[in-house]
Length: 467
Image 1 (cartoon, rainbow, N blue to C red):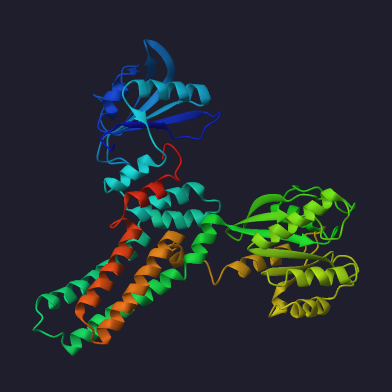
Image 2: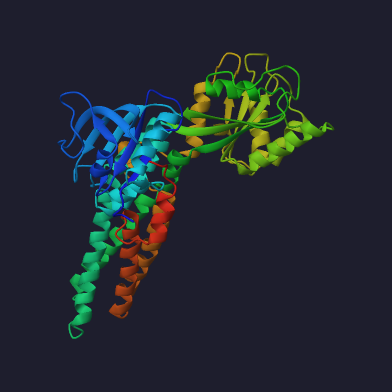
């Protein structure tokens, strides 16, 4: 299939200034030659054009002009796929882009599968598998930190670390296999100590990478934060403040919010999906009761809860009930309406919080006024600190690992520890070598040096068309 010439629309579907159709493969220049007519003195046909040049002309089909275009000719190997590539910039809009693509397909190309351009870049050695995944992360980035982390991975900084780890493990494996080939020669004590030191250093290195896994997944997927509380506590006002615009309806009438509202915001570099929920109370209204049931479901699935308390009123038995019900969840208590005379004291909230099973309650209470935005920045800091450990530094962004990387590292770590224990315990070297092969193979999966078609299909099927 990789001998085929493929084509796809590389820009989002919809109306816009331009659309780009990407063509790649052995016959890319010949395919476009059949449907492109150069116009102007300096424009050339694709077959005659120099690499990395742009030409003005028209795309035609059956002798009829379809659109006025600019055509970029990129000859192998200096292209994204390391194949001959042509990119056609036509007028934006559903119809012009579709008709230009149809002209290219009728000239001999076939429709590209999702992620096939990036898959070809991997197959042809332009990038490794970790870098290929970074392309998707780059496209889906929702914050500057996520974008920076994806760029670091695309630049190969994670791959360089993984390749170094793999090389170190392979050196130990080669040494062990050499002694298997010459069974009469025992491993000298100083050599054994050196090999064990390398294996333990490899385990420590994997531990350091694994510590970034949670943060890496947070940057990629974001976190889900449920906003809970009794009616009129200020949940919808809080959502509007966190978003920076009016998204939820704010009303003094209790029970205004009857369904969940989801919106995404950038909180200290972390993509956060905030879910405003129906006010928590016993209700005979069937629709409101359904909204409260959904609030409970949302809280159960959330990574963090913002539990809003109306500080202008004394704490009630209902407050105590809801505080206890969500005590097992990671949460931040928010004393809202502190611009009004307060009745719900910090001390009482902390006591209720402590009674509900949360340790160190003082760090979990934030004073807030959704009317004046007082306390908003402190709340943003608290949200970040609740889900992120330590500082977000450049060194950490270089090593952010995904859930797939995490699984491979865990398997490699387990096999490396077994190999070290077997070597230190004087067990047969065949057992040591078997575990080291497993460790090397698992690490190789991250950069694609050991991969299966099923794995590649799973990764690249998540890409969009044209990428």
